[in-house]
Picture (cartoon, rainbow, N blue to C red):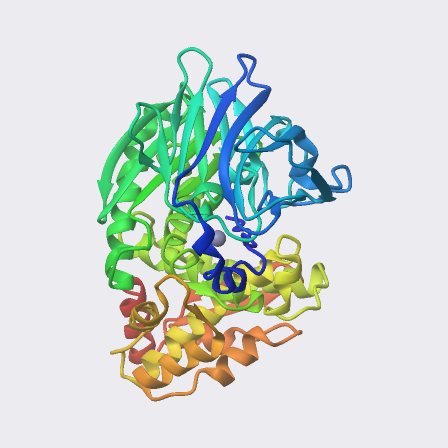
Length: 493
Ligand SMILES: [Zn+2]
């Protein structure tokens, strides 16, 4: 759920400015060979890669009070040589950034990674970094692969030597040798989850996407439930956005953990579930699965230009997840009303109990501390846009049409949307200005009055004291409000 922004720094600008320097590139693929020791505690990595510029780095680094270099503190014995075997000096700049004495050439690299990541408390959760189960290791590429910081031309071939009986499950294309893989870009290499071990896996097609599901043995008996939900949701998303996501092959890794949470990557997502995952607990695990799958469209294909637009990535994803789960009859009316009721309750908790003072846009600065604002505030903004669009067009245009329109323009590599783009598409489709509605929600520092918005979809909001919140179908709802509710959620009020 906590979808951490994978910061690629000034990568885009660096990419643009480095096009000319690529002329020096030797046109060969990069290679990484990963050996996991039999006790699973260490990775030995041997690589050769073309280093554009003179920087090497781990991406996705989170520094912690107890790990001042973040994931860089697990790297040991880094040795760099040129391809003739001559040593190349390496300077450690801290936070997993290094400078090589001689760059703009192919370099050979060996290093080790202590796989102790799960001993630490990561802001995005351990499922976005690396953890062990009794069946193997889930690792995100940025925990293992030291890569050129500026640019990494060419594809990358990855191979593994693993403990007896282990298999590498990755979202990458199969390579020419058995057990080898090809990552097309640096993003594909580092911004992805993989599972190395003995866990069950199955490949299947859903919504035009090839999915490989890897599940811990505790949950494997329930795989049909998971696959059914994934099939229905992916098909719905394909229709909703009017096309496939940027990547057509995905790996999904699901294991048990201390909490229920997930993280989405370029071509994969990593989920942990606390407790049983069966039909009765589907409201918990199913919502996370559905949310992370939707990020393949909104989040990884449709990408915001500014951190302040995080509410659109998370909140609109939550709103569309809720809408499609009930329209698909994966979740019922009770789930819908509970989730809608949690919106005013959550804003009350955020503003009155937690005393959060930032706007929804600014809340991204502490996304995990302010998640009620980023996710809840963003969901409210999505519902408000949906209602305004439908009011202006007698129900002909709503969020699905807005998403299709925005996706058609921005759902491609290198294009990024802003709030102004969303407003522009709203004006084009429905002839209205969504900006005042959005500003009232995403630029406010005070508690929103949600009664009018809920009344617009036929629901009456009652709030008492700090927590007590009831959202009930209003027997006096207007026909227009009733129709709006039914149009959005595919069920009568
Ligand atoms: Zn998310």
